[in-house]
Length: 481
Image 1 (cartoon, one colour):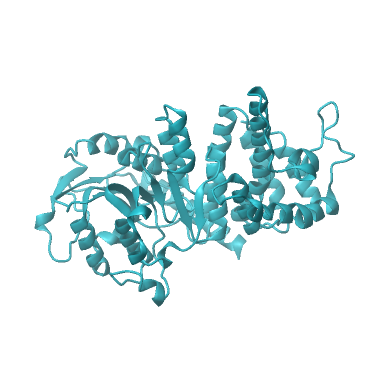
Image 2 (cartoon, rainbow, N blue to C red; image 1 turned 120 degrees about the vertical axis):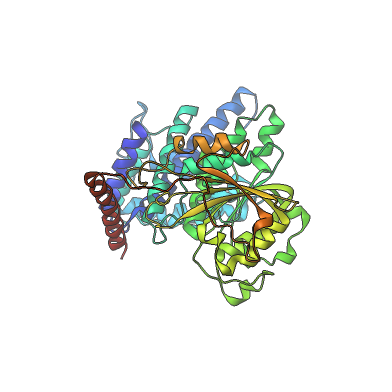
């Protein structure tokens, strides 16, 4: 695969770059260069389409700021013009002092905020070049210039590999998988929630926009008209992200997936007062994996009816408020939410105002390096919960970096969830049997007592796999310190 070998080669160059020290830096620096090449191909494609229709297309990036001028000037034979192609200090000076400032100005010159021009300006207002060696930059540019994004297959291969880079970034981050939710899990959640064209989809803690990208892929298969396609582009997907780097990655990720001007804004969702949310602000579908284990300032906590210092519990209140009546949600959350005494009032509110119809209990290791147990809670707003269908994902192997979660692992869950069938791994809970604390702990009544019948050799293999994952995580942390 051409893209894979190119991405790996670029990572190799960045490892020798003094300004880049970890996977977060690698994807950030690869992203802005990749983005400019993608934009150049995109504008060329639009220009050709306009010509075929007897129209004129006005490029956003013009003059020497075009990729084909500053990054990859060509000879008449179509080869790199090595005489006029900048390198060394000249290249870095141009990027830092001319290119970035010019692209940053797009934010001011764009007619509205919902345009690609504005998004370009936002991206380059947030980013900075960390490639200090113009020779390294030239080498990276030459490799990226060999990539083309004008066919559906090319774009698909690129987005798959870009997602893999995001996964590695998330696993290298200081907060474990903060930026990354495994794609097999996201696809399964999207399938259960089943967003349809005409509905709005929202993620208020969108990270790298994995949920929004997968929802776009899922809903794109429903397109039957120009009007449908236009809705997906402009009035379907909405996201918010607090931190700078994931916000930029999210914006570019959605553009790479095919959403020209993503409705993603940078900001702290929890800083919004719930009383200020109006009906026009509410969404049909919420898909999210909100950060947990964090905390907010006292003034932020005052925005919520149920006071708590845990960010995940604040987000759950936000989800309930932001859903339209009959709106649906699929939320990944730490499993302690189901039983923690501090979350009892939030659970009660959720059960009273929404129909929590499904809880998916995930095994340890789904979030590589995070070391937490999580569940996915599915609910519909507008009527109280009567019964909850639980599914416990029991796998015959230990999950980790070398044994990640797959879509095949979730096939039984998807199948049984449609009819909420009871099985060895699934059961129904009558909410009327709950006490005042609304304890929703996962207690499988159908699961026989587990006897660990692994051989000593198999146990040692499991320990070795876990040790390998731990050693890699420790090394990544050391590299960032």
